[in-house]
Image 1 (cartoon, rainbow, N blue to C red):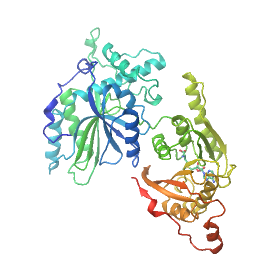
Image 2 (image 1 turned 90 degrees about the vertical axis):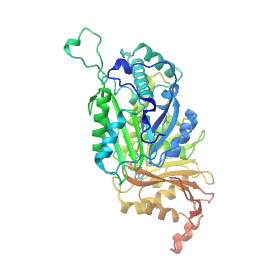
Image 3 (image 1 turned 180 degrees about the vertical axis):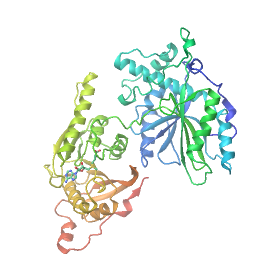
Image 4 (image 1 turned 45 degrees about the vertical axis):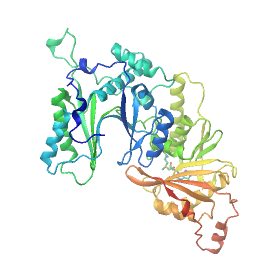
Length: 484
Ligand SMILES: C[S@@+](CC[C@H](N)C(=O)[O-])C[C@H]1O[C@@H](n2cnc3c(N)ncnc32)[C@H](O)[C@@H]1O
């Protein structure tokens, strides 16, 4: 973490061509990686990072971001994390950047900053990242990816330690974008590569005198001048990120061209959930070996599919009452199965699909370990009015099939009022343990972790409530911790 003005500590020589930035050595360096994650699931991401990479992640004040240190031999593993959306390597970060009062002064300072930043390590990581992707492209298609011998060696060191391959969607978005450009008179001689770049600024906070566009434009202009790169908003090799959240400012270089949540779904529906959010929900209920896990309103199957891929010792049943949704789920499962078969995998996914009405499940009482689902919010799917009937019916039927005493449910909804009311009327069949507040497509929603109490279904005070017509207020509020 730096203070404004001390950025000259490790100044990069301005690499105007690829020959300078190609200088990747075998040296292992330590850098800070930043990751965007579904808001509310920052702790889940930190947990995964600690578990898989063995380092502690710092949760940013800016919700939806985590930061963690890695040595470059771990770069490959970073791309295999399941809770992160976008990755970048940090060039510099300022916890308390004192932005100037006037717009002109601030923009002037941002321009000056460009040449003072310690770009070197971040650029090395960007280059290594590209080499890893090209190596993956080379393995996959067999087509000759042009990797410099020394880069190839670095990539091999990192990649060959791993059994898995980089996620499919991560393969080749920059391949083809890093082509060199040359003038006719250069033909026949080794071509100097002109790097194309863009600056993306994300700004939050109401005390700034400048807009994100102005910051990106002026900082970008100075970056261009310093490195002699060429600005290109669409076909860029490097994306420089300028993240400003109140007085926190982080400058980074993107390591992903598109979010890593795009990994499982090929047949989308109107409300398909991000795989990273599905992963967070799954981790919340801690699947155990041989658990039977139900998504009774599966839509495109995003949740059970992520579960069947990542928590493979459980068995998943995906159901929906809509035949188009069921077809999409089947197609999504088949697509993944084919992809795995192409890579030589012989094992199928532990998942089955059924068309059913959740309010009347063809499942034995008390036989399911975990129910995990994304309920209709009543906006794009269903209606608020219908939810008043649907939510109590489905919570009751879920309570019937869920194992008393140990069963769990992780339910996502934005219709919080209706959900809370329905839970309060379940006669103690469910107990709320945690709520994680998340942002789903701009909507503030809750992921509720419920525990199935030991109450026997059909013999609960709910029956008393039904017959007396009084409101049952047995809600365990003291257990409801807000994790967000
Ligand atoms: C919010 S969507 C689920 C989206 C899903 N998580 C995905 O990623 O595609 C809710 C789903 O509940 C289904 N649904 C609504 N009422 C149902 C019922 N009574 N029984 C079964 N499914 C139902 C809808 O057809 C819809 O697919």
